[in-house]
Length: 424
Ligand code: ATP
Ligand code: MG
Image (tube, rainbow, N blue to C red; front, top):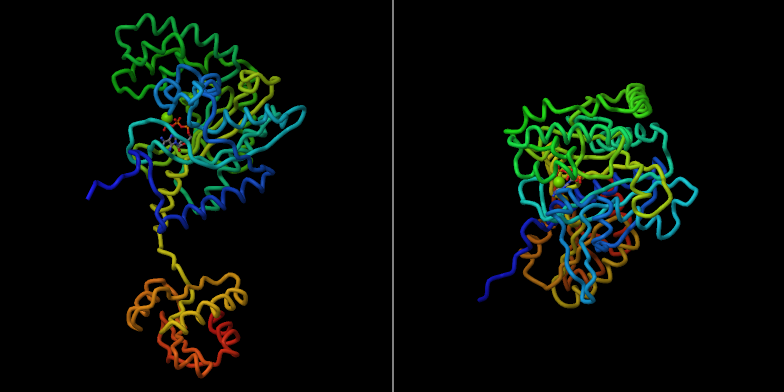
């Protein structure tokens, strides 16, 4: 026998025992997004590589080394999307969705990054994200954060902490950048390879390095906070006042810079210590220059993305996962006539009980084997239909999860009896 094919490293199946958790998460996210006036957008998984180069930035981890890029048959360079924001902006510009109007959008789906797989870090992972366009007010930043806080509450999650920072205006970042490069140049012997490569193209990212040998150097580096423009500082203060008024606790983390190029002003992350090293569950902020960068008219924008694998892991950790039954009702059928009749009866019951999960025994088997399947299905009741029952116009009914005498009932009164039993 030849070796069976496995899924790609870092890309995982979501198995049936976990899909109910995913469905619960996804429906909660969609519901909360609607509560704040966001509507769903679905964009293609594949885009022109240039879209991500121009938005995320050439000198970022994602574009430098994490993208799944390939040449299409006609030679165009395409990439699997590594995140959702760029596609959203592209779609908005292409369809005129943000022309002279505010627009609130959400998306949910798979993203792809060629990273080193480990717990909480995969090559195909899923993000739920929202993007709001055309709103410059810091009230939006606060509302986005409140929305995330509501998501945690709705999912019954605690122990996720909010960190916020401001990156200031583009001008402030440029002023800081100049002195930062000077500082890095004067310590070039202490920089690791990544830092040397980035110090001119994206020096702020050097401060984001996790290399322990560089931490003291980073600690002593010129701080962006000292170069912030007055407007950004004032708006950052407003965000904080709004969070306080909403009762949301936070920590200002001046080292929070985000890995993507397009952020400015308010940035935030929600972090938990319950997942080990990969503890960032949600990340977001303002990106007022991105629309313009992608060829649109300058449009203020802000959003966030939540990593669903980390969210599902948190829910598993906090609440455990109960296996949910496949069926509520299982119909046993002995003999080919009974099997045919059971299919008809099952359809009638589905009409009568639209929410009920009903399984007919398919493929025969002894009474014992069929009861075993019924039990495994998780059903509360089994209906039993043999040739004898068929002739007499009755059905047997047996409770599978509690003690109750097996009963026989006429086909005519089956729906009423089931209604009573299932409500109990
Ligand atoms: P990190 O610093 O962990 O690499 P990032 O800055 O690259 O994160 P974003 O691009 O902001 O992450 O993505 C937002 C969220 O998506 C993250 O906070 C995380 O929850 C999730 N995420 C990002 N990359 C992965 C991945 N490879 N596997 C699983 N989840 C991911
Ligand atoms: Mg990353």
